[in-house]
Length: 182
Image (cartoon, rainbow, N blue to C red; front, top):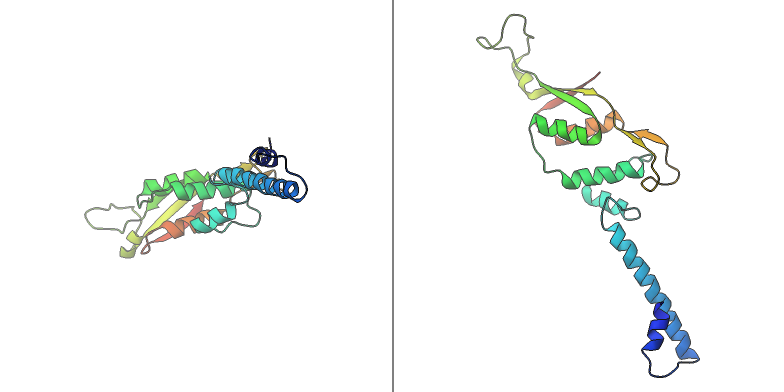
């Protein structure tokens, strides 16, 4: 039953003329409001958002690339909303793993008498603020019915520049990261 028929049932007499037309118009508006509410109920969760996804990205401070598929954009919002933060090596390794990259992190240590041995690399004292990220693997998104949008590429991978931007944004400000791609 549509809303126009439900409104007609509320009146004690049969409406005709202008009153029937008004009731029909009000019923159409109520039908549209119900459809809009159902859409909003679906869109309120970022893992199912489509038309409100740009709003989720704005709230999270994300700027998607022009060719980023819908799955990757939703995943980026979800990762940011679910992340709790951290400064440990394990946090950065897990963060990269959620994007689909496999990384290891080497913290460079300066050469110190009594601790270092012959044959160790000679790093200067400021090397303690430098860490190396060894990257292997790549995050790949494949087109999936019901999850991807029309017009997207069948296969898409997150560029390495996104990994570098992510880690440089999350790293402690006094440190420097350089990347080693295997």
